Image (cartoon, rainbow, N blue to C red):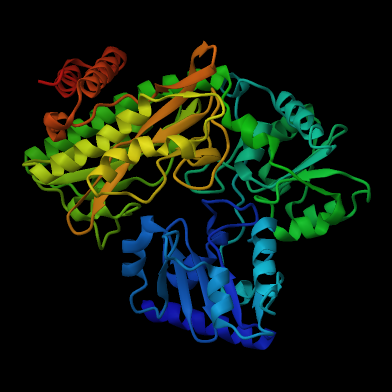
Length: 594
């Protein structure tokens, strides 16, 4: 199988040679700068065989390299064997960036070719400047993939459906009006939107174009007089077309977006976020483009009251499904019935699908038994699917899409005989989860400022994790959502009431086990003093932590009280929806710490 990927890299090099190009770059994205993408845009996977959701392939005349972050070090090392592609560790203190690598390995006068649809304007301009300083040229119209990929999947054609306003809380017309009002503050009269989740949220539409992410492949142009959705019209029913017309949104073919933009008046002022809009789009807009953050990102990220209440209700149904799932998992292991990592994922999907308003999983379940738990974004395959035994740790990261909310939860459980090391690791991770949950912080606080709360106990023990601590979660949308995060680099977006974040510190020991504890949190007002407004978190997720893995000697009295109080809330909210056997299981799982 690996020879296939080596042959594909050879074909890329031949296309480079014919075009006079010395290096080319294949990111894991689409023309909408999406994290999760449709099969049509899985170019990097097609060329390299690496299946992770992030990572960038670089091909030169003599080398092929794949840049991945710490979530994928183990996975990439395994999947790239025999391909001739070298893994490059990204985002570490001593990591070399792709532009710096190109500068160090290409001669003056060399040409780097990229597909301008697959790089944001910001990323392309930054790379262009770095390369130009060393007399290396960047061109953005090199795309050999269609020729190389003879059976390339077509663009998604899944139908669009309406997300009812009783779940959304606001009509499409109201959302468009708010976005345009915010654009005026940036001296723009219209907005161009590339991000698929922003389009879906703004227009109250959903689809299944991207696996687990209920979005439709489209672009959107918003203006006070009328707006235009660029989409394959075959995806729209008369009901959806009428829904869009009610919000004064016209429909045009997906591939007509560049001619439309180029025909806009020269004095048009179009807000477009250069960080999330394709380089080729900004080149087409030229002087018409106003570089500013998309107002829809913040409007979507700060949940309205209907969305917040929807999340609370979805968490109850999700918690009930989790109780039934973990009861069956534990019963199968205890009685010696055959169950594997893929079987665990199937059980979770089964019980969630029985809940009202459930639409789909929110991502492919990450289920890692024993040493597989140390692979941060592990995905079991028929070849790697481990059989569970009554021993060791099981890490399960899963979630669901409900019409009234999206869930994302990780629990690490003991299947039997937990060691002192496993209990210590688990407790240090749990202490970080609790510390972030208990945080109180002033208005204007960024996620980067509170990230240390989750890391502190691991750092004191000389331990660490390298992924982000928290990400936003969409409302019946993408499980990873901006504009806010909690991580130790980069994002300076202030945290605001109504935002939802995950809280997911972890620890991963290669060859042994992985631990992660994840809840979803809602930012709410705490109090106001003479020093200003302060915020806190409301815990949304409803499912117990494994008490068998808690080392009580490492907990403070406040942490013990937090665990007992949280477990009491879990039992109070879930038990009315459970039968007697399920209540008994949950009562034992949420009993006060000894």
